[in-house]
Image (cartoon, rainbow, N blue to C red; front, side, top):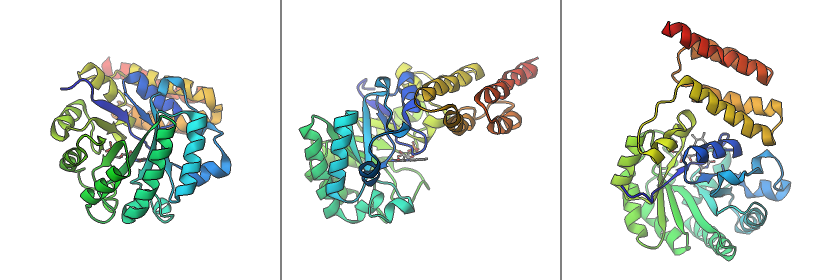
Amino acid sequence: MEKSKIVALAPLAGFTESAFRRLARELGADLTWTELTSANFILARGLEGPHFHIFPEERPLRFQLQGSETRLLVKAAEMVIKRLRPEGIDLNAGCPAKKVVKTGSGAALLKDLPKLYEISRALAELSHTYGCNFSVKFRLGFEKDELEKIAETLLKAGVDLLVLHARTAREGFSGRARWERIRDLVKLAGEEAFVFGSGDITSLSELERFFEETGASGALIGRAALSSPWIFKEWRDRRPFKPSLKERLSLLEKLAAYLGVYRGPEETLKVLKLFAPRLLKGVPGKRKILPLALRAERIPEFWAILYRLEEEADANNR
Ligand SMILES: Cc1cc2nc3c(=O)[nH]c(=O)nc-3n(C[C@H](O)[C@H](O)[C@H](O)COP(=O)(O)O)c2cc1C
């Protein structure tokens, strides 16, 4: 297995904020991604607030933009590059959510290839001016698989990195991601662009099989990173890792500490409540204790309840 393959934390709206990106990097992710942010939002509200916090430790970072108007996307991208200095700019051309598609952005761009070309070309040119590289994260097509036409469009536009979630937008998250189409994309891209693939990689053995079967330069880990972020450590060490309950709780504590740097206690607790059920997946006693922790109104109360999981585990082992 080539050592130089990249394993990245995928963009996951609502989850991959600064604190979790930092945790993923610490565990061994080579690269992180921001969730999609609309160009209109940036132009209207600026780049203030927790959403735009970046720790140096979470770099290299790709900043993902969503939009449908070239001029606005270019303006927003320039603000992001100048202010946040991400290592890469990424265009979302894969989000199938209704509220995104109805604005002509996300996966809707796959229905209008001339527009996808125009936007990609303009963003590639802008990114290159600032020494940033440019990627597009997309799906196989909107209704049906039109990978060849889409790839040709993006390569012609000068995109440096093609990132394929190997399903159509219509499929949402159903069925299996078609890794063989990622292999096809690697062949289509040749020496012109790098290819990263996304979809259904949930373990170290699948990561290894993904690289063998596709020949891609990189892999994105999405949903699996939420319940087992140590998948990055497993990749780094090339061996499976089974965290103890203590280790899982200490990851959650680390997340809390990182969140506390840029979020107040109430918001921190809210985010912790999103991660706790995922990070504690499969832990004995979770069914009884987690619902109580999710009702906690203060952080100390949250921890006091969660640490009862350790007592449960001790009682079970006795
Ligand atoms: C909750 C959630 C939020 C997501 N948000 C984004 C996003 O903001 N931008 C994006 O390009 N993809 C987004 N995705 C897609 C993922 O990046 C990834 O391509 C997809 O989940 C397939 O990979 P997986 O099987 O490893 O999860 C999201 C997926 C999920 C489940």
